[in-house]
Length: 95
Image 1 (tube, one colour):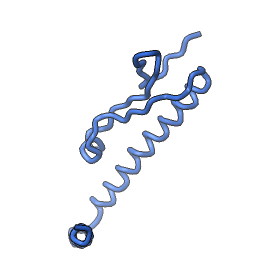
Image 2 (tube, helix red, strand yellow):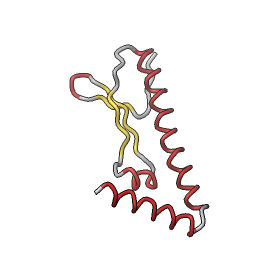
Image 3 (cartoon, rainbow, N blue to C red):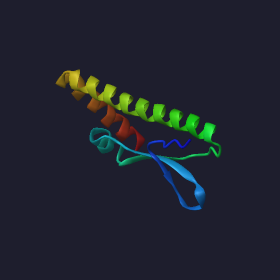
């Protein structure tokens, strides 16, 4: 029986990698188009387990981004302005 896992590419030398495209809103913030990780597993059972773990990691990263984005949308302009001021002060202290 053959099973095809989504988001798995085969690289040169028989190596495999997990590669999935970020959503547009996430890609703009992260500055990258794809989430890519080389797979370490060599056997089929380990490959499925690693694939599942990477899917969970990807979904968690997207959920975390969208959660923080929703918090920013719900915050008042005054709160956002104060947060921007604090960030600017930190940047000035660091330089």
